[in-house]
Structure formats: C-alpha cells, structure tokens
Image (cartoon, rainbow, N blue to C red; front, side):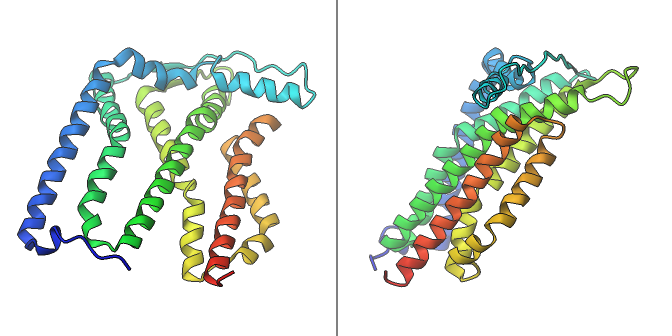
Length: 270
C-alpha cells in the first residue's frame, strides 16, 4: 500500500476543523457566484427549463424519427398547449431564486467534489485514493446521465400526459409554476439516483451479496420489472416512448452484470 499524506497527518483536530471551515466558505462562495450568474441570465435559464413543456420539444421529433424507423410512417405527435400560472405574488421571484440556487449547485458540483476530495484524500492510502477518484467519477457521470434522461425523456413525456389529461372537457388544466419546477427537480433527482444501479451493484458484489450469475439468472425478471416501471412512468404513451425510457434502464442492468462479473474474476485471480 502507498503511504498516507504527511501534511494533514500532523494537524490537530482544531486544525482540521479550520481547514474544513475554509473549504465550506470557498464552496459557498463559488456556489453563490455561479447561482448569481444563473439568476442574471434569466431568459436563457428559463428558456432551457421550460423547453420540455413545449409541444415542439426536440424529444418529440426524436420519437417521430424512431417511429418512422420502425415502419410507422404516418406517426405524428399532435400539438398540445398547457398553460403555466403563478398563484402567489412572490412565487415567480422565489421560484427563480431557488431554481438559481439548484442550478448553481449543479454547475459548481465538480468544484465542490474537488474541494471535498482534497480534504479527505490525505487520510487515504494511494490505492484508496485512486479507487476513490474512479468511484467519484463514475457516480457523477451516472448522475449527470440520469439528469439528461429525465430532461429529454422522462419529464417531457410525463408533463405531456399529465398536463393534457382530463377527466372531463369541462375541466381545463392550468399548472402552477411551483408544481412544474417541483416535479422537474423531483424526477431529475430520482433518475440521478436510479442511474447509480451499476455502482450499487458493484458495492453489493464486493460485499458478496450479489454476483454476476445471480444477476444473469434474474435478467428476465429485471426486464419485466423495468418495463413495468417504464409503463408507469410514461402512462398512456406509445411504444417508441416506452422504448426510450426502458432501454437505458435495461442497459444499466446489463452494465451492472458486466461490472460485477469483472470484479468477481479479478477477486478470483482469473
């Protein structure tokens, strides 16, 4: 094993707290500056956030191309229009403010991870440091992939169905801005967490809870479960939409099998 760093090893507990305090201040400072920048670029920010609510969003054009590739030449997604409203006097300003903080934290997240890792890395052995870097990169990349899937697939399809669903023609849907942003953030975080499946599988594999043969054995069950989840996520949608949601989730399961299998072979010395 490599040696631990020598700089922070000689520091007192109070010294570590002082270093951590400085890191927190730097993180808050950078996050605040980025959030302020996001807040100032209101038109660009909200143009991006509200784009999935439009009937001509890029995802619907993708779905039409997929449908044509599958032989459904006459398939077209009809236009829809859902009105967004603000019911409180300060709701638009407060939503703009809180959303800027969320986006600022997301944009500044690489720097935040760097600062936190730099704080704990002196206490790690060299091999632990390298493994930690790989783990952080994998978790972050999968989280961003989950956010992108939510933005381009899950949220637009869910908004289109739920926003246009009517129990009666006499009832017109008007969605509040708070509801829109809340659902947007919730689905994004949900997909970011779901996309950690390969990492969770790897950890469970190292603990001996699962192995590649077990995951392969239940592949069909996992596929049915993924289809069920995708059908719930995209209620009332078409086959191309269902495929756009279920395919990435199933590929994550297959990736988990490969990762756990590779780990098992390395542990066995193969």
